[in-house]
Amino acid sequence: MSRMIYDYTKDVLERVSFDPELFMKELKKAIKKLLPYELDHLKKWLVYFINENPILKPCVTNIMKQELANT
Image 1 (cartoon, rainbow, N blue to C red):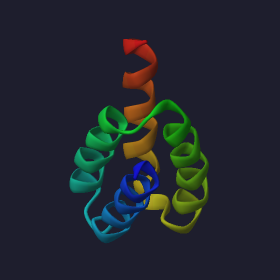
Image 2 (tube, rainbow, N blue to C red; image 1 turned 90 degrees about the vertical axis):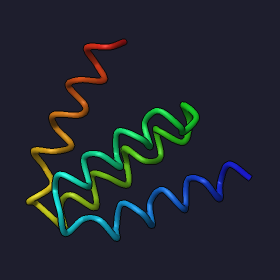
Image 3 (tube, rainbow, N blue to C red; image 1 turned 135 degrees about the vertical axis):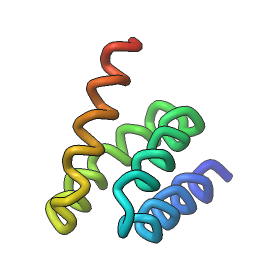
């Protein structure tokens, strides 16, 4: 079941990637909902996805800084 949530999360992020603000909002939701090992997979996927969509790099960088500060 959790694999379905992870796949759904990736699908949503791909669909909203045209808007950095919306992408950032959905990424924040994903970070709250996914399990730790799913977050590891998502981070690896984000590295690939950002290389394809460099406009999203500031969004991901900001969110990762916020998450590191919260831990």
